[in-house]
Length: 280
Image (cartoon, rainbow, N blue to C red; front, side, top):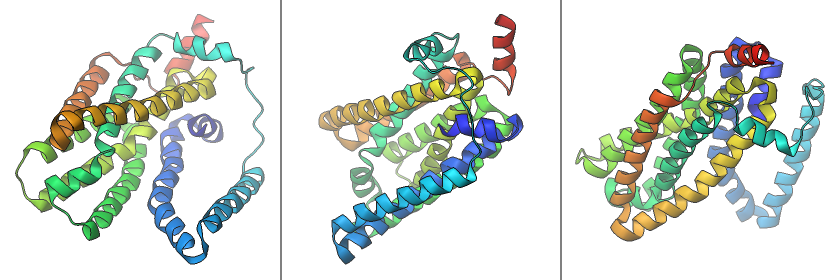
């Protein structure tokens, strides 16, 4: 719902920046939540973590009720609307590109620990620090993507899988030393920080009159890619180890970038909506 809400709260030109700010909250939460939950669990038992999460949910709901304006539905929501959105010209092909990007990433990320231990050679004490660095880079990437989207949606959609693919291939194939491996991990985190921001903006530009339904389809695609990427990565890991996972995933990411650059429609603000109004 993030992009659909943002496009109703700010002018069209500010939507990319607004979505980036919203998604930066996810990146910060990813960095903070695990150590905070572990600390609470050690301090007062695992139930305290669940109770704290429930209380935080209530506080968040109350904050949203006070801070957000009322936004009545712009059109009726039906189950068939999802199929109608999926049939819009260019939307299905874009979802395929998005699926490839996420499958490639989650095949990598599922095996990030053995990769960092075997390729980069970090110990258990350094692993947590490097994952923290990845998370911070991910946070920065969401903010950078907001600026880059104002320059070019197509560039952002294409550049993120290119950087992730090159980082994956570099980690797997280049004997460049630990310091440069860390640099590649940072680039990977930066690039993935922009993926969700870019595709959420893409869906609202492609289907501005059904942004909620389009966002729902994007989420379904992402969750499917999480499962599919992890499963594919597991199969590759069984066949040839972590290097095979990173090489194949890197190739998939670069192939997805080529598909996006050549075939995926990337409308400017307002162009998709103008076309729909003319068709109507």
